[in-house]
Image (cartoon, rainbow over all chains, first blue to last red; front, side, top):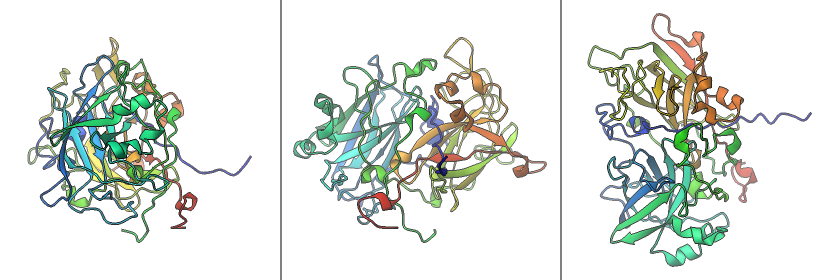
Length: 204
Length: 246
């Protein structure tokens, strides 16, 4: 026998279930008066630095149907590539940008809409710059452990080509599943849980 | 706040076999919602190591009292009054202070305040079903609520959810983000639930069962259940490229 490491095991995940919005966006599901507003719905204000963008996301199941009962949280750097977090060692991020968003999908169309800014570049482990990206965490009924992925920007072709994560994908043809397409100030990002177009998910 | 430097080490690899697999056909909704390809791994960058923080100014005075936070003045929610309390720790058994913990649940009859829930049990006009709090300097949290009821759900012909409370927990890094459910000690419904049984290891399930704690009970008021939560731990910066903080 050796000494004990005295580590604990992470609490196991359970699905967020069909009523996740009661807990995390109650005003969306008509529970008013408990919280003034749902957390994460406003990421920017008048003073936020950077290019304003709208990101529209949808999630599709393995039959090709759009999912309407999910919840997405996003986390991203500010325009200079800094995170609004105490764990950010490189400097203070824009105080007028939270970097964190949370949205329920539209109950009819399944579209998630985030009003945010385009993030700056964040270094990889070896200090190479990563392409601008937004981190995603997806929960819903039928998802047992929150799904991690990233959204990259279709108009950042040069940065995407040298991105340490995108370039290490074994199946390079799957890279485009992580790239949102731009039209005007709006990026569109479709997430596929299964099938030919299955989005690349991460275990990080 | 204690005068300690925030930690910036990467997180321990998640032990995915301890969690329910994405594809768990006993819980039918997973069948078309489970990714089939292997997830891609890479070492944590600052995008994963950092995460949002929430200040206590977001909290209202009744956010951690579900018996009152949706009730008319002078009234309160119907059901057995319980205190749920515990500590948020990481895998190194260190308290996780100042993190947001959110919770939601059905009412005492097993009905959710949601337009898609058509269960026979009536809504309680004084019960909304959600609350939140922020852990203290030692990672502790607590809230007052009513014990939720069990309810049937469309999966098999006769599947029932055991009484449970949903939890959403933030850590200090975005990849610590966790959603889970708390069950109640002694409930025989736990072991027949297809959602509980998505977790392969019985010992893992047992960590989701809150213990009745008569010592924490408030006499003539509310019983107490203890539910500790463990988030992913992070490596000491000693093991990172840059030797700082040790």
